[in-house]
Amino acid sequence: MNVVDSEVVAAILQQQQYQLTGEIGEADLILVNTCSIRENAEQRVRARLREFRKIKEQHKEVTVGIIGCMAERLKEQLLSEEPVVDLVVGPDAYRRLPVLLDNVQQGQKGIDTVLSAEETYDDIDPVRMDRNHVTSFVSVMRGCDNFCAYCVVPGTRGRERSRDPETIVGEATTLFRKGYREVTLLGQNVNSYRWDRGDKPVTFERLLELVSGIDPLLRVRFATSHPKDMTDDLLKVMARYPNLCRSIHLPVQSGSTEVLKRMKRGYSRERYMDRVTAIRRYLPGATLSTDIITGFCGETEQDHAQTLSLMEWAGYDFAYMFKYSERPGTLAARKYTDDVPEKVKTRRLNEIIELQQKLSLTAKEKEIGRTVEVLVEGTSKKSGDHLYGRSSQNMVVVFPRGNLKPGDYVQVRITGCTSATLLGAPA
Image (cartoon, rainbow, N blue to C red):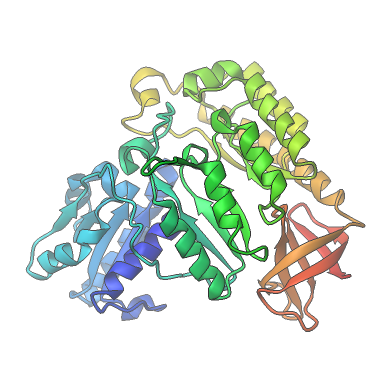
């Protein structure tokens, strides 16, 4: 979501004659797009601000701004705690950046953190900041209504609202005509997308049909799905359209029903497993990735063991794994005690990471000997003689360059792997 927001901000500023630069020393305006989901993310922002303070000491005309979720969460507090900051702008106030920047030029601090019930930026053509010009992101909705106990998103990004489907299809169509061959539809909970204006509501299932219908050569992914809203109808639509990629990101967070209850996730261990079983039934061969939080309030060794056992049962191809980080203002911070010792959190996280590395390797080893269709994205980091791309299952594949170029589709026979990458040669 932050990538999309940065592209929207760049588009708004370009309309005011600002230009992007790849050299921070050339910048007159430095904006830090921030995340507040974990304390560590905010601490990294604070460290960057110390670097910017040095730049501003040498170039006093430089404007430094904080935008995004951290700006929304801390508001005026940022201005008082970080004197280097001139500008604080929340996720729904990017249209006001030109006015706020004018205020800064007049010697005032600029701040706007008002959340909106309607803002989706659907009329703004984002400035694409990707490097390969093959894959890109398209925002389909903003905000979240789930209010998970540990999460700051409803407070920093506001309530859920969906974007006009015509603008989504139009943006994806434009990307395809410019040579892009893959789009990822983004939302905090894409499954709950719904556009009710008009005679017939557009559900997320219908939106997927519309976008996948642009052209068979356009791959379509989406993130993030919520298990409580992962329906059989959605899986049936995916099964009908080959260009809807065979990979699903389905955050579990914990394998314990008791922990999930405290997290306010809206599903049990059994319900989650039922949804994974449905995925396997409708989309055989699809890969599954997830998010896991370890050490949430009250988590016992038995709860931890249930997470490990669910991981093994699901056989995740990939996972984002974190220690629980209490965030101010959340239900968990108000209601629960962060009572799992840091050493225990670290040990449990290491066990989760170790298991996931084994699961990832097992998933990759199953691909050896198979031939998969790969969308070429660019040159391999390790060798200029090799390219890399992804399969429909979202597995990274590295193979000899030959006469191929980014944007091409190629059949690759898999000959080897690591836990993170498939290795092969054009078939």
